[in-house]
Image 1 (cartoon, rainbow, N blue to C red):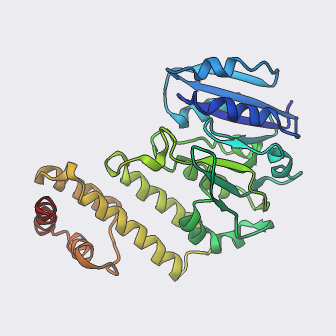
Image 2: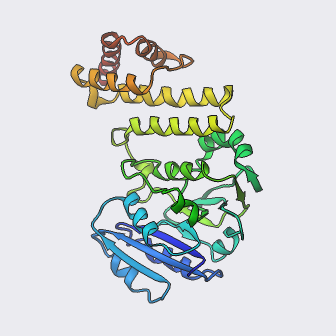
Image 3: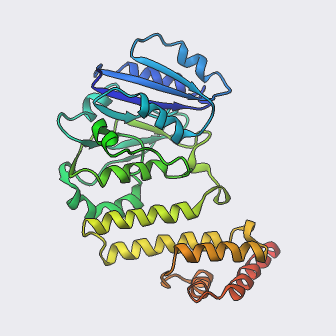
Length: 325
């Protein structure tokens, strides 16, 4: 049985996949298996994967079902004591696994380096904390750091004991199309007492590649799911006595933004559609904060009082002015 299972979902990444796989095979830490889940690629990704002849590689081809489903298939087939994920358009330093794995820890988180598609460095993200940290202590800085860097939600530079995932039936939610990895790791943070931080930034996260969530437009994002994800974050913080005034302000500001973004989307420009989404929102979000400014503040004030028609007129007026300008 390998010590580490590496799960790599692949969908149309022929430009990047060879570099990604080769960087894994170059590891100084060799006790791993690489599970490649070909998610119905229509380019030459599968052929490139099959060109590597290494007994540690397992290739599973499935009909395209999305990255979360592909990762879940990888989890179902993993045999390692630990699980880590590497995306097929990213790559890692040859010391990556050696530095990321820390014996006897349930979960380890390292830093990451963002690069562009020419592999030029953009920035480095390093966790604020270091060494072994109790979850109850982590929770007090968790929300601000996640908002600032996203580091607790990235699939990158994390390794988890597989028993924790399996014993708690943790899988990726296939309904979530953005921040599905953050949702996955939130479930893990709620099931462990502590984790370990390393100061290495040996995972290279390639930004602005095709199919990247960073390129998603607002009308492609399910903001209702994002609101639910913020609620899960709140519950995690509350359970660790870390939802204080600062966290509440951060939470409400994020919820405000989601509610406002939903209401001003063009797909709700007809009143019937607007009223329908307004009613749905009110079932999910009862209270919003009024510390915002300008049109957003007025819109949220009307939303808070369930004044659908005035809110609709206000947003319609905004659209009209935008077209004129």
